[in-house]
Amino acid sequence: MEQTKVLIIGSGPAGYTAAIYASRAALSPVLYEGLEPGGQLTTTTLVENYPGFADGVDANSLMDQMKRQAVRLGADVRAGAIVSIDLGSRPFRAVDERGREIEAQTVIIATGATARYLGLPSERKFRGLGVSACATCDGFFYRGKDVAVVGGGDSACEEATYLAGLCRKVYMIVRRDVFRASKAMQERVFSTPNIEILWNCNTQEVLGDASGVTGARLLRKDGEVFDIKIDGFFLGIGHHPNAELFSQWVQTDENGYIITEGKTSATCVPGVFAAGDVQDPRYRQAVTAAASGCRAALDAEKFLLENR
Ligand code: NDP
Picture (tube, protein in one colour):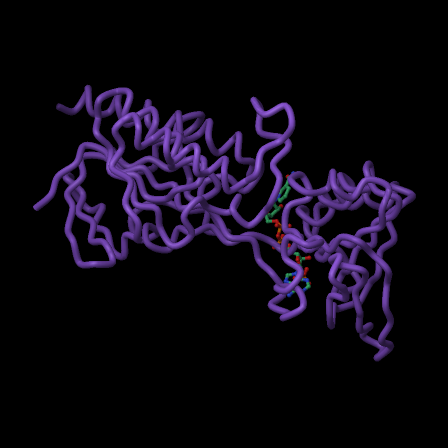
C-alpha cells in the first residue's frame, strides 16, 4: 500500500499552504484536491483583501498560483476526493474515489465549509453577478449602492453592519419576526440607521438582467408580494463545515466544526490536524485559512519529529 508522511485533504488556501510548508520541510506531502478544487474562493471573482496584490487578484488565478507553488516545491497534488478514512489508529488509512488506498503518518484536514444558499434558480443564475455569500469579500464592489442580506443570525447581522458602512442602504430579509443573533449583534443592527429590516419575509426570486442583480421579489407572511431594488444580494444563512467524513473520529462543536486545541491545529486524535474553515466558524478568510494551513504543517512536522 502507498505510504505518506503527510496526507492533506482539501485544496483551498489552508490545504495548499499546508502543502507548501510540508514540502519545504521535505515531508513529500500528498494532497487530494477534493470535490471543489481551489475551494470556496473559486466561487468569487476579484480578491482585493489577500495581501501582496496591490491591484487585487483573480480568485481562480490566486488558487492556481498556490497549487503551482505547492507542486513546484514537491507536493503530490491529486485530483479527486478521499471517500473514506480510518483515524482509529496510526498509520491512518484513507481510500480515494478510485479505490486507491493510502497510509498516512499524519493527516491535515482542510476540507473547508460550504455557504448555505436558498436554492432558488435565479439565485444560482446571478452567483458572482450580484449574489454573494461573503460580505467581507464582495461588499467593496457595492459602495454607495443598495443591497440586501438574507438571514437573522450573527452572520447576517455582522454582514449587514459591515455592508452598512459601505453601502447607501442595506435591507435585511428575515423570515421570522425575531432575530436569532446574539443581543449585542442585534443592538448593532438596530442602532445602524441605514439598515431596514424586512421581518417575516422570504425571497421568492432574485431579479436581474444582463448587468446582474437589480432587485428581489419577496413574500411577506401576510401574503403580500413586493419587490425591492438592490444591486447586491448577500446570503447570511449559515455555513456547513465539510467535516462529516471525520466526525466519527474527531471532536466537533454543536455546528459540526472540528475542534482544535488552543492556538494549535491539533484535533483530539494525535497526528490529525485541522486547518481553515472546517475548524473556523468565526473568521473564514482566505488569509486566516492560509495561516492555519501553515500552523497545521508545522504541527505535523513537530509531531513526526516527536513520534519517529
Ligand atoms: P445561524 O444558524 O445562527 O443563523 C442562520 C440564520 O439564517 C437564522 O436567522 C435563520 O433563520 C436564517 N435562515 C436559515 N435558513 C434560511 C432560509 N432558507 N431562508 C431564510 N432564512 C434562513 O448561522 P450563522 O452563520 O449566523 O451563525 C453560525 C454560528 O456562528 C452561530 O453560533 C453564531 O453565533 C456564530 N457566529 C458568531 C459570530 C461572532 O461572534 N462574531 C459571527 C458569525 C457567526 P431562523 O432564525 O428562522 O432559523
